[in-house]
Each structure stands twice: as structure tokens, then as C-alpha cells.
Length: 525
Image 1 (tube, helix red, strand yellow):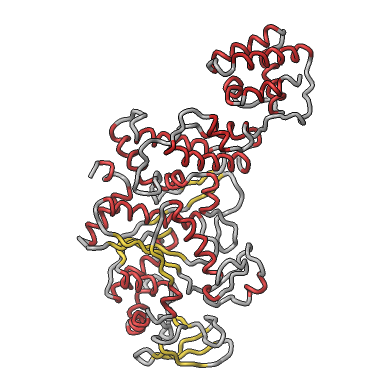
Image 2 (cartoon, helix red, strand yellow):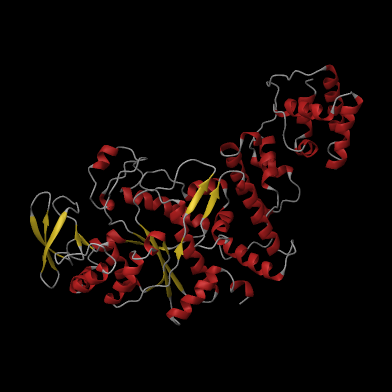
């Protein structure tokens, strides 16, 4: 194993799992969420954190089962803002979300629609877990033994929960909850248990009572703080991280690590991951409100590898921002530097080299590392090229020299991200479009007109075969020969070409533009 596989946080946790859980044929790593709304990029932090540890374990030659639980037997508590037919959805409150209809018409249920959105996009960033659907498992009777065990250990579970409660649970508390067979809602009260599989409950809204068999009826489930440790024990979970809410003192992780022993299991290795903030666009992260930034949104601006890089290069317990503002330029530059270090194109000290190489490996969508770096074009320059060519990606790639076949696909994705960013999020002073024959003429003086005519001639004769720095001399010559101040002329050229008083560095900008197009625009004057 190389040194760089011993220093990244994912590798450190992989070593800890092996050390604490012992030598096993298969290690189980878990993640999961309630699909109560759009799964946002904050939720994705848990998913990708697990995937990175899974990948680290596999790099050490271990077999790993990566499970992702959809907690779709949870209660539908709130109608998100972004859903059609909110009045209809209102009638499903307090029912399991797996029974709530998808009013967008895209899936069999509200829960399934949210699940499918995630399941379709995760492979794009190299995440391919085994999905477990908890509604299906509960409703099939798979957890009947687990629920019976919780009932048998009722007093011990209550004692554990009461250690962390200011208001203790009373003797009438039961470690299961029931969805009424009469209304499908969880507005019920457990009345008794027969010591086997029979549970009697009352529907509080209708007053009706019923006795159900946990093995054959689909209405019972365990509350979260008992459900989580029951599943740890059942699946033999070795690793599962959690957010601040679960890892806070007295939170569900603290109680679950004690409750799991009552099911014959052990708590997994874990860590607390921090929040993610968003820069450069409106809205806050909130699944239930519908105001979210999803993985789809992030992939509009960042390539899959750079999306992974954001998480790989940051420790999970560190808060960071995903930027849609000018920081995008730096993030692309940081990734490109990481790639250059990996391929030996940028000299750094040994410690940094090993660190960056491992970050680069884990940032790739698959274990198969590219055989050469991507086409290293600065993101800002790429944005300029795309605007010069009106968003025509094929034209941009065709204008670049030395693009190999293995680089082309990655470059196309980067172009799409750059075009999305420049047209949707970039500051106004970054945006431009080349003038055309219908653009209104700019008012110029006679001397400015003469300088533009000279510049058109220099572009025609010298632009293609003259280095950028040398061509700058022709721009200054056009100014001097016609008595125009340099700053004044630069402003005039920008106005003529893109309708703005300033723009990208002029000589480089002219060389990036199609020569005939520049001559055509300048020749209008």
C-alpha cells in the first residue's frame, strides 16, 4: 500500500473499522434517510462520506457491503412548498410517506419519486449502494422478531431513553408505534401486548380497537431510536456516520449505541459530519420546505470529479460552502492543480504530493484513474471562449489545439458546466456576446474610427501567426498612429466588439476570437 493510502481521512477510518471490528469476510457500511422531500446536497455529504470509506476499505483488499436505507415507512409530517396539489397531500398527513401519492405523476408514490431522483443521479458521481426499502421490510413482516424483541426489552429500553430525557417516559410507554388499519394514520395508542406477536391498539380518531399480529399485518414499526439500533444489529453494520443532530449529546446515536446491545449487536464506528452552506445563489437547505440545493443543481456547475473533490478534500467534521459565485473559478483551479500534481506536472514536496495524489484518486468517479490529465484550460478562459462562440461547445473544442480523444469527453462536460455557470450565476461583468450585423453601431470619433480600421488590418494580417504579447504592440501602434489615448481606444474596442467598456485582456481576447468575425465587426466602422 502506498503512503498516500494511509493519510487521507477515509483511509484512516477504514483502518479504524478493521481494527475495531476485527478481520471479517464482509464489512457493512450504511447510510440512509427519510425521503420526505428533495434529498439535498447536505444529505449527500453522508452518502459520499460512506462511499469514500467503502472505497478505502476495498483499496485495502476488503469485501464491503454498502447499504442505503430509504426510511419510507416514516410519517408524512408536512407538505413541502414545491409540490402540486397541496390540498390533496394535506389529507395524507400522519400517514406513512410510502402511501402518499406523487402529485407530479412521475412515480407510484411521493416517497418513490424522491428516491428515484437520488437513485438516478448517484451513479453519475460514482456512488452505487444496495438500496433497502424500510416500508417494504416492515410491511412484509421481516422485522416481526425485532419488534417482539423490543417489546420483551421494553423496561430496559425505557430506562436507557430516560437517561437522556428531562421528562421521563412513563409505565404506559411502548417501544412500537402503530398505523391504524382504519385510517392509515399513526394517531393511535398501544393498549397491550400478549407476550408473543399480538398487539392491541386503539385508533384515537375513531375510537376503534384492534388486535394485530406483528408477523402478518403491516401496521407496526419501531420508533427511530429503537429502529436504528435494531437494524444495526440485523445488518451487522460496521460503519455509519451521522449529522450533528444525531451525534449531539443525548442524541439518537448515544441512545442507539446502548439499545443495540439489547438486540445482540454493537454500535458501528461513526463520525459526525458538519453542515454545508451555499454561496452565490438564493435559498436555504431544507427538504420539507422545498427550498433546496440538490446534487442535480451542483452538477450543473461542477463536473462529477470536481463535485467529489469538494467532499474528498474536506474533512467531514469541517463546515464548508459549495459556491456558485466567483469561487467556482478557484475550485476548478484547485482541482486542476491536484491533477497536475498527480501526473507529476507540478512539483511539490513529498508530503503534499502523497496527500494530493490520494485526493485525486478518490475524486474520480470510478477506481479506474485516467491515463492522462484532462485538458487543462482555465475555467475563466473557457467561459470566454464559450461566449465568443455563443455556447457552441463543438466550436470551442474545435478551436483548441491538442485535445486528445481521452480528454474530449471530460472537456465536453466541463464546457457544459462553464456555460451553465456563465449564463446563470456569473456576475454581469463576466458576461458578454460578440456583436453581429444587427448590433447598433457605437458612436466613435474620426480618430477612433481610423484606429479601428488600422486594427482591423493588423488582425487580418498578423493575428493568427503573432504571439499574444507581440500582437499587443499592434494595438498600441493603432492608438499612436491615430492620436488616440491607449485607455480610450481599449474602451472603444470593447464597446465595438461586446458592447461593454471593459472585458478580457484584449490581445488574448482577440486571439481567442475567430479572425474573420473580428475583422467583420471592426470593418463596420
